[in-house]
Figure 1 (spheres, rainbow, N blue to C red):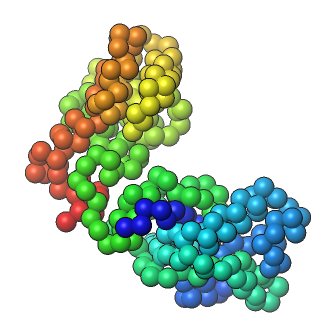
Figure 2 (cartoon, helix red, strand yellow; figure 1 turned 45 degrees about the horizontal axis):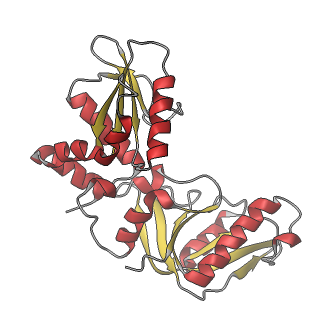
Length: 280
């Protein structure tokens, strides 16, 4: 696999007729719109200069270096995403139809992917029109080259890691009831709920290994609660436990490797992880 290729997400939430989107889908092209001119010079555009410049800079980078692209066409294909390759040297074209002028690039070696088979490609989509997609880069790269992900914790996306950490707490009867969706709503913790005694449970989940980042997350978790009865959990790579030291006695550290091993060492739980990662 070519590890130099960037992974890009593009959202076709374009204010154009649906038949034009169908044409893009049928021809396996990606496109951005903005104004109805063909230029790729952001200075030619009257609105949203920074956004336009960012989009064209990324498209030029894709042209120069190549890319694996996941293209969402939600207006016409609600159940799938299109994954293909931009080969090095692919030019930025202009598709003209009536008053519309779309800036396009041609995909090659493309595949349609069902969200039912790979829900991560729907749940982890970044905001904006076109972005590099680091959250799913490993999964998408393995998918594109039709290789199975290795059965290891680092094959999980951040959202998937949050899910199995929640399921770990639940199976250990540390949490019984969620007070908010996992990973949303609060900046300083990812899991927020109650145990059987209605004591609040807060947990932070991270892949981070950097000492400064880990300490900042521990501090934020500790500072996020005002009730001393709240039970705090911190899930992180096992090598980072040393950063906790004695500065955060209120926080219970659990390694993400321990959580993953807990799932794969049991036949029933292992099958669920395989389904999550699309491993046969």
